Image (cartoon, rainbow, N blue to C red):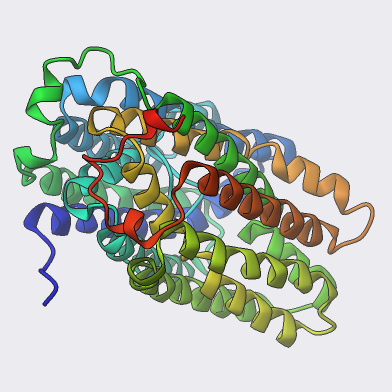
Length: 412
């Protein structure tokens, strides 16, 4: 019988869930708030890029200093920062202050983020996961499910309101999110901290013997993220409206269904990983999902495009918990914080550029970004498969191997 999740894991899943609820809510509110302020398209684009840059920057800061400062303490301070950000934004501040808050990494453009909190959670969950992806499945499912609820909550609250101050007050929802997350951090045990023997060597944490593996994974993940940036939820909404003339209500229910599908998908991924292996699950599900993504460019109707999107989401999200487990499994324990920070930052660093490229590709055809995204992300899958084969990572044994015993330096 499979053991229940530990108390630390339940607290970390709670942190992810409450953050997903808050970010699912504020991601919708942020767009309306910018529109209510009369922020132009260019300025809004720069602000969204600042949000992404802030997440990447603070992930690197966490990776460099969290082990020395304390993972639990860093996690609690992050959530307190979320609460402070909620207070500031709810006060209807000048637009320049939005940019300041954006750079702190306490906001996100995505329901399930890859910022500093994710970096810490990914590392702390590794103390229980052991390379199977099981706890990462529950972790990501919680974020997706509660993020979907947050998005629906935002839609029901703000519809029909065009008052700028009313929109700003909705950011106050981040205050309880931050406080609940801080309480979860307070309840974590010392087991989530850096191992005692490694702690003696912790200064300003740097990558050591695993650096070549981490750098290669970061490059591969950046390619995947660049392809994903061509087909964001915002672009898909624009694409569906422009090509098929669908209503906002239809889009809302579609993306709610996408989020629920994502939550279920990441729960199935660890089961497949235990049977076939982490890399096999990643590539075996992600590659066909990218074929479905490219096929969306040729869908003659919204109904077919929606079916392809749901099918694509069912497969593509299995890559998430298995990817996180893979990173923790192929490096040494003292390097986990820095490795998580670097790989997460690599994914975020390329995302601001992708929408600009997508805009240029649309001049060739409305669905061209979807086609290019499928090709680029498919190339990532094949490159990951080839590299993992060279390192001997393609095996069921690897998925069950203890991360403490993984020695990537011998293969790098």
